[in-house]
Length: 162
Figure 1: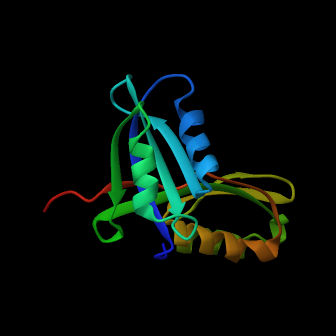
Figure 2: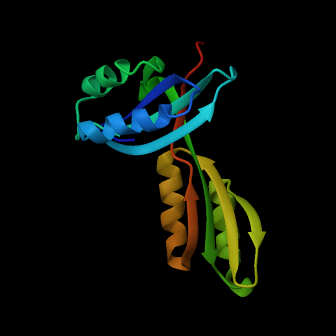
């Protein structure tokens, strides 16, 4: 991920409307969100929101400061790219008749992607990897014709202490 984008992880109270308030804060301040992923944590009282923020739209310190003002935000962490692991999941359907599938199978093997389903003239694949590799995989499939694509957005965690 480039220096233009930074990953911020928030632990928030798992209450109705919290995501809307957080997203509303970004909209009101003109902060651009490149990616957003929300999931429950191991404690039902909290959820985890992972943002990839475009720091050209606002300084990172300003984003964190504004998030810290929201009452339902319990914890905010910036993930240092050198000390974190980030992943994104993608499901993609490409148009490829049976006679032309071998190169797509080879590409799936190269990227360690999974073939989820095959139809009369298309294939559905899945990949979990770094956002850059997911981008690359999607670009390499583009010449076949993409009929549908779904990406989760980036999630990340700090690396474990050695």
